[in-house]
Image (cartoon, rainbow, N blue to C red; front, side):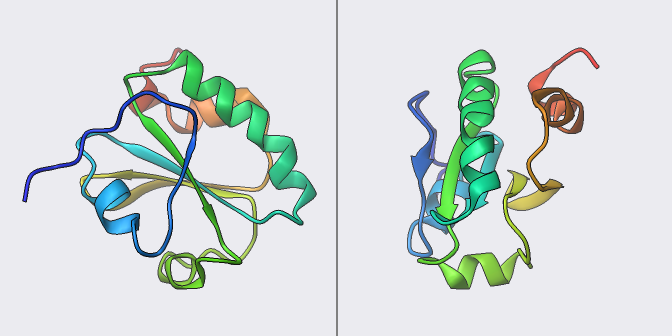
Length: 118
């Protein structure tokens, strides 16, 4: 089956059911924000990730996965604290950032994929 191409839209929600197709089979790298509605740091990092998606549109796709509703995927990738972001490329996790970080931290961690100056 061919790879799924993402369109540059707002950060989209993925689920246990859609994760394989929308993240692991994506034609470009996908950064997944593992979060929960009750998590204050998750809410704090949301605008940072949205801004990164806007600035770096076309280089990587961004997605969110609510760990309370999608326990299987969170467990599969050993997400033990949130927020956790994992960059997936070619179906495999490539870079993980745990905790709420400033924009520059994410850009440095993902520089290879974003083409960002470090």
